[in-house]
Length: 148
Image 1 (cartoon, rainbow, N blue to C red):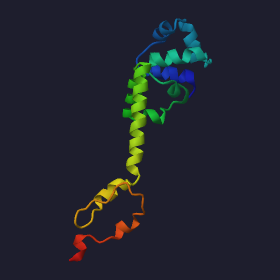
Image 2: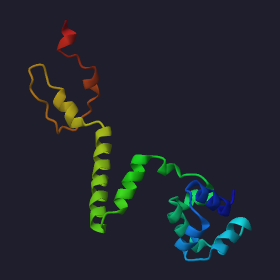
Image 3: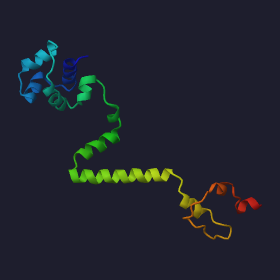
Image 4: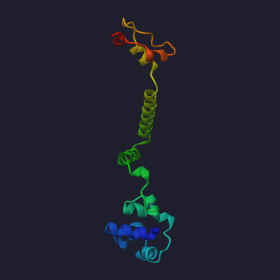
């Protein structure tokens, strides 16, 4: 299906007329009719305004498919909300996201400090959490339940 056929299908789908589209684009109805009926090429400068009028993406108009990234509704909502922010607010959001990603990556790494704090001796004397040592022996070390 070519672009002009897609425009015609979308007009029908939304119960819109060529006249309404021509008014939106400030061109004659005969121009739109030529695009659709004679399969004429639609000039590039009209692609975005046509998409806005039909409430579709240029990607959809050109390919007939939705981009995968926009099939995920929460991501689409996030992107649409982000675009409404001021430049300052966008900077704040981006900084927050970078911090969250860095924190998430830290959580995935083994936290030696937590392991040392959890691995206390039987008399509950804490092991220095800042010692940089091989902790592989701690994995096989017996605990108090192994004595029985």
